Image 1 (cartoon, rainbow over the protein chains, first blue to last red):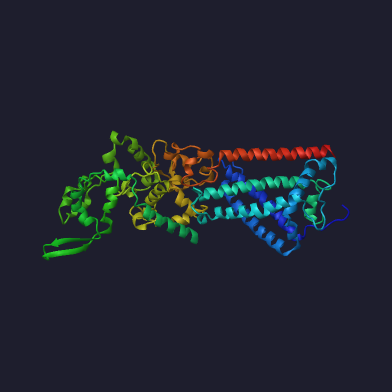
Image 2: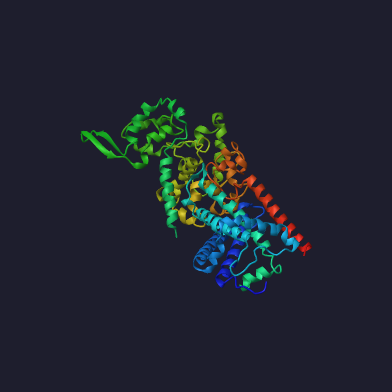
Length: 202
Length: 323
């Protein structure tokens, strides 16, 4: 890459790292509550609840910053996709990650000032940030204030349904996080993308 | 500070309790087949004692007088005929002399029978383990910290008591019924001070530490945390001092939830692991984070996590090898 591009303004970097650390807390405490046991407590249950609630509220605040930031800054355009082209683009990017990368072929969608994400990144980020995170937040607030949840949904208890939605979405976002961290090692060096999120320059 | 939400929760809980408490623990068939042989006899008492106002002929005045009944002596006849003691004559337990009016003053001194006076040592009632219940009660804080004035009747109203945990398939009703027993003293200073000189502690304030207080109050009984579990009796009667109360969340919020040995004990034998959910008997009534994890979701999530890790590892190793 010839020239460095300023991809990550300060607000995105702050949002990203708060979001990342809060997600780690949420995953840790969420797993601890889901698999709680008196014999093997990962985090004490009441402490896990408090940390989870706090981190969940922090992620919600972050999410609003993310949405407002994308609405009112140029960053939002990176999340727009053309439906007619996306299937073909996804195929090319998928081929690159499964075969091309090992044959040292050039990336099919090199990043530029107009393209911050490759098509796979873009689609996964859209699903994560505009589908699963809102579902997590809404279901999470339902569990935080269970009196607002309807008593029965599709024949099962409302809290039970909300919790299932919450843990399934949480699981999907956890998988996303693992894949996201791994794909961040695919850069100029294994750590260059991580450095970019600190300096802002890609 | 009591939150507005907690107040709202308790208000809703109380309203639900009022209506739900009216429902019988017996089936409609059971009730319709009953023959109320003492109904006519009992009516002699209930014509006054089931009303707030009663009438009697005053010989001195020479005319009928209208009087207010002491509210503590008013018997709800509907509740009585739905209770476990529905086929009793009033004079089975009360002196025959009560048939005379005005009642003689010394009748106030009559010694009231307690559960074991009728139910003790009788094989008919063996399955209810009355002796075991008494043994547990004698160990409880209710018995050890108070005088003999604390009898069965402090909690179990003989005129309305009905078996609940054993008969009622609706756990929510059982919870309301049982918690109302505790709240009848712990939320009512007049009754509380019958056996104590202290002011009853505010239940809401004392449980402020409890997350989602209103949800807990509506979904578990007080005795889940405040009574020692006993395998031989269905409803534990050994109420513990507050320092021995369950405070560790995981005791309920875990796969081996203590609620399976208490609140859901009667149902737990009926349904196990429906649709792969651990402690599935809870699910028809409630949901407990940590206790109701799903076996299939567990397996699927471990498999997916495993495949993702393996995929990432494989891809990473190939990248290093092909560098």
